[in-house]
Image 1 (cartoon, one colour):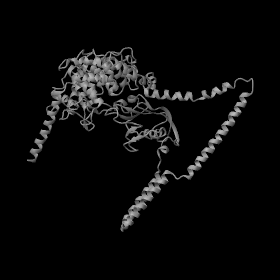
Image 2 (image 1 turned 120 degrees about the horizontal axis):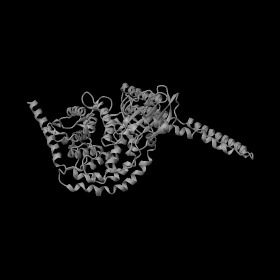
Image 3 (image 1 turned 135 degrees about the vertical axis):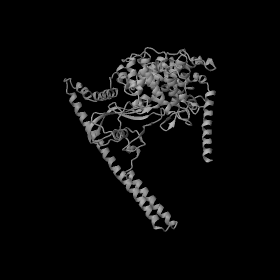
Image 4 (image 1 turned 90 degrees about the vertical axis):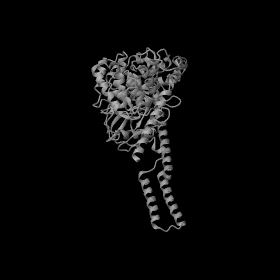
Length: 587
């Protein structure tokens, strides 16, 4: 009897969720939201790139030049995938003559990550001269397919999003035999990963973006995601599952109950628009206008009036964007290893400015030998320097004497801990506690804490940060902390730093950030660190998969930062990336 009740209850839960999801599908007309989305493109440029492509394909008469100018005004990003995304966006917005009309072919040809191969094929599909033929791009991407039929983000483990993205890139070539076979295997993999809710599970939770990418993959092949049997589970299609993440205001959330999310909203509207078009999404001019499958046809013209103010917004936004990425100009001149080139170029600058050129200027003032004033001046300078040195030494001695007479913070805290222990014992005596074991426990705890503090020490913020540490130098590396992919700035520009024997990517990060006054949040351990925050920038701040990672000599190591031992001459980069795929393949 109990088993029957449980089965009935489970069936009711599934049925209710199916009814709820289908209600979303029936009552939502996404086109009514498009004018507002068009007007908000400059508010979120990174996600707006995808939305702009979708809006252009929905109606290529829309005026998107304001947003296109904003993107075209950006310096070419360090990351090749982002640069290729900008190039497609600029094309969709009708902007010509920008730096994105001709990207660095060497970087495109040497792209190694699956996402890099996907976007390079997108460029080739749109007629860009990438230095490779379309067939070459296809072969490179097909070489990444796994035994399961899926495509990996990095390594050999298939990924739901990357598989959908690969299908979108291959879609224009679906009639070619090798491509058709790969697409069928990829669709079988995606179908096998779909859950009974119609959605997909990624890192332990179902989310909107996986559904959106799957819908875009199907619709790019000319398949309506609402009716394909392979992607309907328990009566719920992947399209229905996508709409279940819609909020009352028309925005979408990443996971249920988490609230509006820019990435989820952008990808959802891309999927909804393309499911009406049923053509390859990234072939930008493959469709002039989406079919009017729902009412409110006048919404197709409203974005024109909404986007007019964008010109003003673009002018405001473009200025900081242009000045905020000095490094990218150097990278565009690099060849196949942009990261290494950036490091070496940036470091060479301070060496030339801080070298003998500065000291050569006073020598030129001593060239005239008509009188002896320069010698007198030199003597006066020496005397002045001697006096300043003596004053500085005296001040330091006074400060040292003052500090010597003061108890350290550690001593003060140990005294406070001991006083607290004594106070507890006194209170227990007043309360006439007679058990000796209670007093012994208090004394042992107090003594243990005091010993621990005495050994480890306690430092205030101004003592912990900013100080120079003694390093037993075994070599030098180039070190940087870069968040330019999301904030167009570098926390710590590339610089030459000392390393000691057995220094790791993690230990150097901690030491340099301590010197620079930056906090590092490690949610792991010293042996196996998990860096979730540096400075005031934390994981998931720019999308659910954004966070910190590191590269050494332009490659993402396959071990944690606490296990990677650095060598003299290495280039260590800590990078904040929108997705782990931006780090490329593991070594």
